[in-house]
Length: 201
Image (cartoon, rainbow, N blue to C red; front, side, top):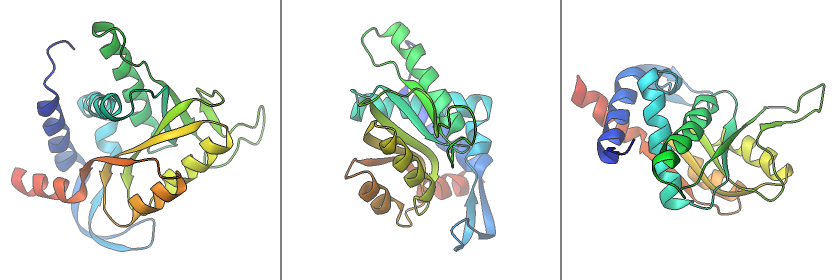
């Protein structure tokens, strides 16, 4: 962890997404819109090396932009490996760099649990905690907004939103409005992924 090359790791992650998760064709998205490409980031975030790189790249973004963050979380299931890998990356990094933030993780159910404690937010939960919401792919922002609303209702403060790939189809504006202006940052755009995919052919 001490000999990291963050720029190289980010490029390696982009290449993995472009290779494993990007397909050209005729697709209908969950929003109902048509698209000539599809990105399934779960293939990358659940890949051994892809998961490791996802955690490192997003943890770097959090350290640079939201150093006061206490936890990271998002909507199940797209965010599950993103949350786990980012939280783990924070622990590995902090071992070699004392004083850097350790991030706990939480997951948001699409609906509150129908039994037991009836929670919608699982894992880390602390009133007033400063947290970052993460997602794998952002199109219109619907899944991210579901997480934002649940986290706000649970009493935590959202200070930022991170997305692995932004399709740049209106999600940023929708998400920032739902998060009361908390900044939205994407590691990559869909155009970045498409360009890398073409270059690697």
